[in-house]
Length: 126
Ligand code: HEC
Ligand code: HEC
Image 1 (cartoon, rainbow, N blue to C red):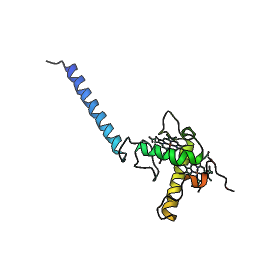
Image 2 (cartoon, helix red, strand yellow):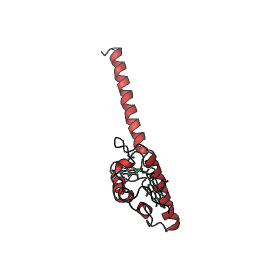
Image 3 (cartoon, helix red, strand yellow):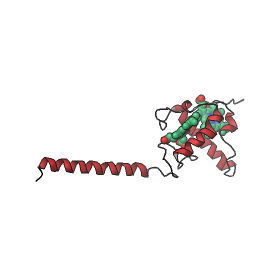
Image 4 (cartoon, rainbow, N blue to C red):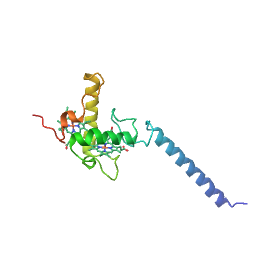
């Protein structure tokens, strides 16, 4: 016969396991993504719903070259999902680009980071 202490420990660990499963399910359901690993903190209309691999591909092909920078210009390399001032600015730029393309370019990807930046992090206005 188990002691009441043992029963208590058993019940407590069952509750803890259940809570862990529930928390994982809730976290997962927050992000709809197209296969692969889900990114944690992707908000823009252009990148939302994409897998982490596709987000990385976009970073490499469309962003770093266009701005002439490396990943650490915007990211905290210890936590790629963390917001930084430059990353927040880049989210605004992503939204701007998607609005321009949707509203004025018939939904085609005509305007991108390269259109203005041309290899510079801060393009000249004049
Ligand atoms: C100009 C700024 C900028 C640069 C440079 C940049 N990123 Fe990003 N990155 C972003 C932004 C902005 C997001 C979030 C996009 C969104 O919210 O739609 C992001 C998101 C990500 C994420 C998703 C993280 C998560 O879990 O939420 C990964 C992974 C990532 N970037 C990898 C890279 C890699 C690898 C490089 C270098 C090749 C790179 N990034 C360069 C701005 C940048
Ligand atoms: C219509 C022109 C235009 C397009 C397109 C554009 N940008 Fe920009 N961007 C600018 C201008 C102008 C600045 C400088 C003014 C400022 O920093 O607010 C800038 C500044 C930035 C900065 C801040 C740089 C710094 O060092 O402070 C980031 C980050 C950035 N853009 C990312 C992007 C990304 C990523 C894209 C593509 C999704 C993009 N931009 C597309 C015009 C543009």
